[in-house]
Image (tube, rainbow over all chains, first blue to last red; front, side, top):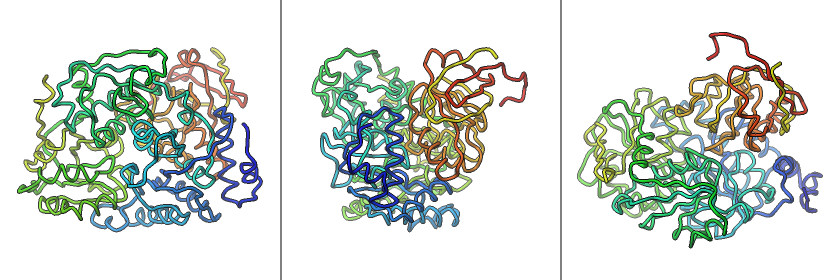
Length: 419
Length: 147
């Protein structure tokens, strides 16, 4: 692999221990991946903030102890604890203390403490063509697919190395030639009302990830332009059931004005046609609930946006959750602040709902042991909760989730899916 | 010995263990219990199996960026697979092995093999991995205690 003078200076330790440590890992990874060279990045998003036990804390504190500082604007992904709200939940104090130490370690590196898995919702987001180093699978998929920025899915630990050096191996989706579509998914005769629903894109994403595996999928046949939140939900679903870090939607995403451009003039390796029946099957896979008594509704994976708070507020107006059902929205501090300014938190509080920031139910042990059955409109929560939290999950759209929280039982309106 | 598979050592090392094979990719975060080594992705064919100290054979990883952190923590706790064999360049797994060596002075071998060789392997075989990426395949012990 070709190294620049800067890369060599880092390796030689001229720029300090942290740069030396980070560059040695980057170079070793680049060589294993047969990279021809290292390239500059303009920003980073660090996923290593998730507290996963002593090892992640040791890694963070070792870097911080070496005086590591980021050299490009760097945002931080969710942490292992809601810094100021964990006491309301079942988080063990020892966990909170260690997860917080890990937050402090990454903050000490000159990063922006955004604590969100949806950094693309912040005002300053990557531009088309920008070379960046992001961790967090849904965010990577969004940055590539929707914004047209260039990043691979950075594993935890490597994202921090990239931020500290501003350099990464030129591999995968950093390179234009690897961004061509490979698999065509044609959606046939989907009702437009379904395409507009928030329950549709998580299912589409889940299906996309299961079909595409490691390849770049291209979606054709959508007749409605998806909103930012719907695209976010496709990303989260596809990056969870599979490892989709880039997809194209013909006529909607920036690298796919036409089928030719989406495939960069090549033929698809593989074609699939999907009808509403196929989507119904994918939807059923997301639902593992064996009964209807509900303990908790959770919205906001990826983190809830201002637009989602705006959509939720009228659904809650004048209603109250069933006292046996907890109602939680997970989001970032920034979105919570904006929602508060817009008067959108008051209806949530009146309904009996709560907000958790900085983290989510999958990354902090916040649920009480009696919580056995969840409901969500998130493919990511639906996919991971059974394994990580040992709970059952019901899947529905936002309106289903609110109605179920009111009635205390899982209630799903299937009418849009009957087509 | 039944056969020999020649792979490319992504992280060099020697290890041996029972094979745990699946043609489905796995996210270690949300899919691997770092305390016990159990596969906990309830939609994965290996759900409920214990991968700790076994040779995990999967085509590639999927899902979360945190896969690397889970593997690193599982090394620290002595609950990592003995080795991982994949068909792709499993960069998440490789990184975990590299950092584990750096932090704890122990790692596990990671070997890349051809898809055609991948298809000849199966759960329950005894796999012995050499530093140069050679994998010796033998019949596993006949036992009912293979979870």
